[in-house]
Every structure is written in structure tokens, then in C-alpha cells.
Amino acid sequence: MPQNKIILGSEEWCSFPELGIPAIKARVDSGAKTSALHAINIAPFIKDGENWVKFDINPIQNNLKTVIHCEAKLIDKRIVKSSSGFREQRYVISANLKIGNDAWEIEMTLTNRDSMGFRMLLGREAMSGRILVDPEQKYLLGQTSTESLKELYINSVPNKRGLRIGVLASNPELYSNKRIMEAGEMRGHEMHFLNIKECYMKLDADKPEIHYRGGKILDNFDAIIPRIRPSITFYGCALTRQFEAMKVYCLNSAAAITQSRDKLFSLQLLLHHGVDIPTTGFANSPLDTDDLIKMVGGSPLIVKLLEGTQGKGVVLAETKKAAESVINAFKSLNANILVQEFIKEANGKDLRLFVVDGKVVAAIQREAAAGEFRANIHMGGTASIIKPTAEEKKIAIKAAKAMDLKVAGVDIIRSSKGPLLLEVNSSPGLEGIEGATNKDIAGEMIKAIEKNFKIKESESVS
Image (cartoon, rainbow, N blue to C red; front, side, top):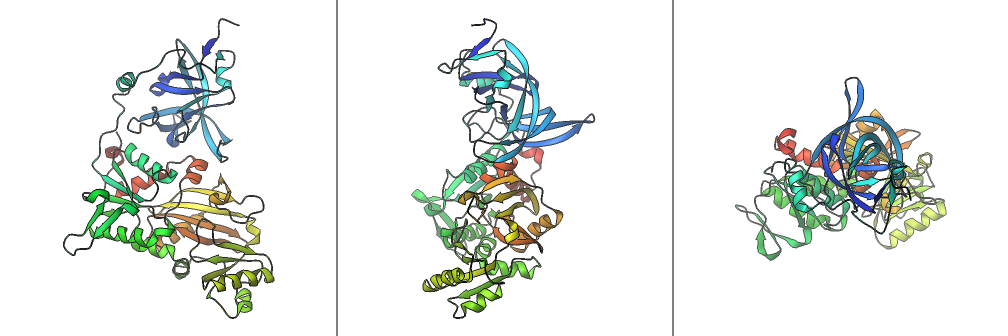
């Protein structure tokens, strides 16, 4: 065995002095080709005529209060397929890695590793010719204590801001809810998860209240971020209205969420504001099924239940006979149904544009799984980065404004007639779009709240 090589365990502590990172735990993985460093708020910029990139990092796992602001020269941009199956464009930097008494320059991609166990992945390209790995061992070059980390990062904790922000939702373990909580904490706010089913309210003209489990009164909140699943829209919006009555700022209002959940009303509202949609028919147990089918150009066509979400309650009828069968089946349920022309040229793809505070902050193309026409990520669809056209951005912004939503996921389909709007979601998921674009969308939502309270960027993050 060559004696000049460093022997590492499967996990080791290292540092990046040039980036101002004095200690970070790395997963040593010879199965991975490229090294990767956790990064958020990634933004390219020009410095002395050269391409650079700035980014933030929480170098300690499960610690969002410790933030390092980094800058590095941009080496490359690469499309990488992540372990979760998303294709994402990553920025590549180089930096001096210090591990034990040795140091050398390595290349790393920048990506959000919040869902991973380690903030740093050391791949085999960085190890080549220098390192041998003993996978049964850990921390062969020494362990870093919690006390040492506190000392090393004593100047890297953001100043505490004053906003108390509640995330009004059902599942604290859901990726989107966790990310919003993390983003708020990272920007120095006091975040609280409020389970919708554990809230109840006192209706009073002078002093309306919301109580939480154990009788705790939810007062002194500055802002609420409603994340209401469709099955509890009525109660979730009732709570949101109650917070509004208590003069608490709600990122999406109860009225906006309510109208966005009514598919028919929302489509009528969008058309009223000049937003084009696929030709659509609406009926309640129609007697004249044949005319309803003709109304949208015949088969193939889409049949939707008004109450459906995440692709559920949506059926593709490829023939007139199939369309009649589906419509008649829904008739037997006495259900309100939408029929919509099928945009064949879209080829199972649609666009999700994420709008926050009147701006498109991210966009992805969603592609349906093989044999499936619905592009929803929850239905097995895949996401990739796409640059929306100016017209598509305009439609998304106009749609969010028409629905009076500060935060909206706007679904658009590309047709031979131009872009058409499919749906506007008032509680859009973050996992697919953050994973594909590597953008801190949860942070953008927090910034929208800060803007309402006229908090400047420099005040919220140290």
C-alpha cells in the first residue's frame, strides 16, 4: 500500500479556507464521480470582467442559523441528473480543500443538499492519486466537537429579526412546509408550524381569537403562510379569514385561495382577464352528452372532476365512445364535470411557472411518465429546467394577478394556438421545482412577507 496517500474513513471533517468555511462534514464516496457542496441563493455575477458565482451555505447539518456567504470564480455549468431523478443545471467552482494536514484544489458542483445527510460530498475525481478509503472507518483524521463548531462559526449566526411567521398547514414533514420553515429561520424569523386541525376559533366582533391545542391563544403573529390541502379548503380558509380579521398579514388571502380552488369560477375569472385556456365545457349530469363532446372539438378529450387535484379525477378519453362512458359514469355520481379539448401537440408536457409577488421566480417543464398523459410530479412525471417565453411569463403573472394570489403555481401548455393556461394552484409544491432549478423559492416567499413589512435585505440576514 502506497504510504504517501491519505487514508480516510467514509465520513471526515474538512475545510475550505478560501470560502470562509472552517469546518464541514463530508461524505467520502468513491462511487460518486464529482464532488458537490451544499449551496442556496446561488447567483452568478461579473467580477473584474470574469464570471463568478455567489451563494450561501449552512455548513452544519440541521443548523439553519449558521450562514456563510461565499463567492467563487465560475469554472463551468453542467446538467446533472440528481439522485431523485431531476435534471438540474449546476454551477461548478474550484476551491482549496484542506483535510488533515494536506490541501489541494478540487472542483465541486453547487446544489441544495438539504435532503441529504451531508453538506459536502467528496467524489473520486477529487480523491484520485491522493486518497485511499476505508469504508468501515469514520473520522480517521479527528472529530470536531459541537463546542468547537460554535467557536469556529461564532460570527456566522444571523441577527434575530422580529417577525413571527406561522405556516398554516397539515403535515410538518412535507418537503414544502419544511423548506418554508427553514427559509424563514435562516432569514432570522421566528417560525411556527400551525396544524390546521389543531386550531379552533372564537368569533367575536371586538376580539376575534384563534386557539391552538391545549387552549393556547395564537396572538402576536405578524404573518401567516397558508398551505391548505384541497380536502380541507373550507376549514383552512375559515382559519385564514380569522387571522385576517385579527389583522395578521396572510401571504395568500382566504378569498384568493377559495376562488382558485373553484375550477370553474377560476377559469371564468381568467377568461374575463384575457387569459386563453383550452376550449372547455361544463355540465352537471348533462342529458346531451353528444353536444358536450362536440363543444370541445370531439375526441380525444379530457374529462375532469371539479374537486380533483394533483392529476386525480382527470381522465383522457381517446374515443367518442370512451368519452361517453366516462361522462355517463360521472353522471351517476351526480358530479360537476369539466370537459376540455386535448392538446395532442403538447406530447404529455406542460410548464409550471412559480409566481411570487408578481414575478416569475422559477419555471420547469414537466413531462409525463411513459404511458401517462398527466405531467404532475406526483403522478411520476419528471421535471427539467426550461426558459419560458416572454408571453408565457406574461400569462403566468396575469393569471396570478387575476386570482389575487401572491404565491401561485401556474400551469401552462404549449399548443399550436400558442400558450394556454391549464390551472392556477394556490399552494404549489416546492420539491420538484426547487430540485430541478436549484433555486431558493421558499426564500422568495419569505422575502415577499419582508417586503410587505418593508424589511430590507440587509436587515433580515446578517
